[in-house]
Amino acid sequence: MRATTRAAGRLGHCLQSTRRVLLLDGLDPVCKERLRERGIETVTSEALPSEGLDAFDGVIVRDATQITESVLSGAGERLKIVGRAGVAVSNVDLDAATKNGVIVMNTPGGDTQTRRRRWRWR
Image: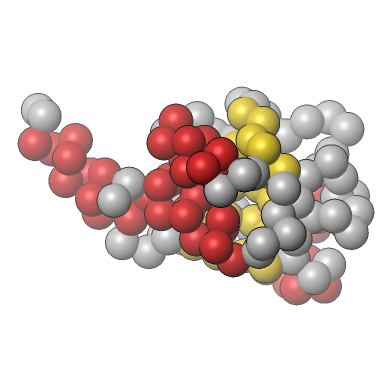
């Protein structure tokens, strides 16, 4: 299972009230499909929107986007979850997330499957 697929599935199951999710860092289109299957609206972007995250219940990133204290504090009360498609969460300020009541999830092991598939096609 791809890391982005696993992140989408876990996010969809985690919060039933999640209705709108921002997908960043060029996530696999399967992520978008999985969320839509669960009735979650998705918005795809290459960068954080200048107006912030207050229009989203969740955000899924890879490693390129930094979810900092200023990003989280400016997100308002709507943002409930940050999903990290991959193992590490070093690009997410965990203290700020906790302070703002935002759940942070990652997908350990998901990248292993993606790397294995890429290796087979070489």
